[in-house]
Figure 1: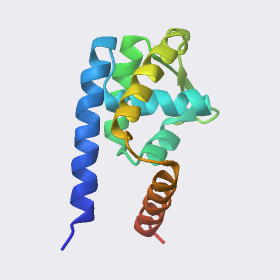
Figure 2: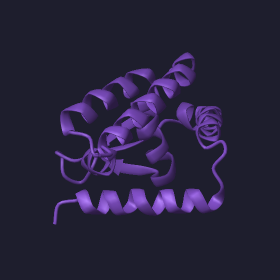
Figure 3: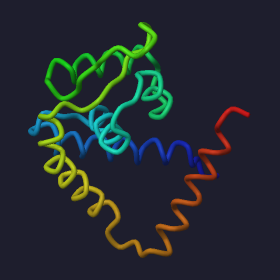
Length: 137
């Protein structure tokens, strides 16, 4: 019997570990990179939106955001509701983003070596179906 969840988990761990090895000299870790990547493409989100998008518990996202803010990579601001906090990239993070993106792309290219477009299309469809199946009804 195949244990697909276990295999996905192991692959994600290897991916995170190698990404950490590449990014940590640049001042980032894979969990932080996920937030920065998301903010780059979505510009500004609330902490709740980030937490939901990344499937990370609120206390974990809060700790990671606090660390990113201390490092100068994000800016948090109040929303209309004082309980709501918006998060966006700092100018320093926007400036560093291309360097971080190049490092992440390099790792992806390594991981995807030997896979053709048809295989990647199937891979993406399967992952999407699995994610959809696991979402609460």
